[in-house]
Amino acid sequence: MRAVSILFRGFDWWLVISALLLSGMGLVTMYSYQGDNVFFERQFLWIVLSVIIMSLAIIPDYRFLRLGHTTFVLYLVMLVMLVLLLLVGDTVLGAQRRFDMGIFSFQPSEPAKLIIIALMAKYFSKRHELIGDVKHIIVSGLYASIFFILIFLQPDFGSAVIIGLIWFGMVLVSGIRLKHIVMVLLVAGMTFGGMWQFAFQDYQKQRILTFLDPLSDIQGSGYNAYQSLVAVGSGQLFGKGVGYGTQSKLKFLPEYETDFIFAAFAEEWGLLGVIFLFTLFSVLIWRLLYRATRVANNFEKLFITGVVVFFVSHFFIHIGMNIGLLPVTGTTIPFLSYGGTHLMTEFLALGMVMSMTREIRRKYVMEVSEVMDTK
Image 1 (cartoon, rainbow, N blue to C red):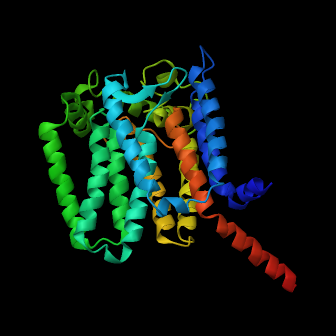
Image 2: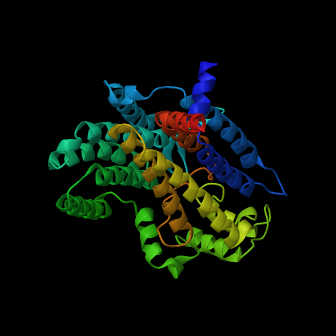
Image 3: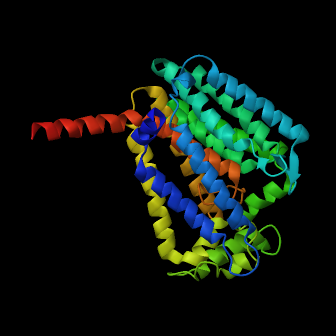
């Protein structure tokens, strides 16, 4: 009974309902009236499992993440997993991104994002008054860069970029000086130049060049981006209807259930559906930011802010590559894209946030009770 009481004390219905509606919109976009619905059926099970994980994640007290060495141990465990992934990971479409467990697969780069958020939150909260010292930016950058490099080598450039954005976003809110921001941007620019020269594969370079001129090779490297643009545009105002997206269901649009699900969604739901999608995501981010401003310590504030950066980065990079504003990087969109690991990680993050901020609801109930008693 106490666990149930804790669960409902921390529950944020606005947050949970918006996440569930986003997941449901992705789920129905995978549905087809013709042929099988393997993705639809599996994703439904992943959503159920993710909600259970979120509910369980509300119960613990996460003070152990900012006290002791637990967060660093988790970082080391994930580090080992990412190294093992390069050695024995399952190769799909030329990338070693997951461990094949038989009935399901596990993609370490997804929980790695949550672990780097916790590690950065702990690091910056412990050094809040000394954040002006540039060495803390360098040290925190080294922690993030190790994950960045190991994920990039899979190769998974999209997830590597998210790791970098999470670090940079958390550095910004931690109180970095303007001159240090300029320095970070310069280092990022030089790093990109070095990666272009020595690390990027030819197909990765071609994707970026195609981004600059999308119509230069629509039968080759620009095919995915072109088909995505066609799908988004063909949705017009009201869309073609759920299950009737020709670009996606007829396989003109590749990976429509993952990397290009926004394009598939826009084709079937139209502009009005896209507006509703943005509204739901805005509500989710609003609730996270609301809770970030009402927590008791810097660790929790930084952790929730990191989750916001995590979600926003995924959301806008995915949409950007679907509408031709960004190069194709294989990035999912939170709660909509098919996949168990990323979905469980996202709902786990929501559960942790609600646990860290459960006192907000308790104080609100106490204030309401006091007001009622005075009447």
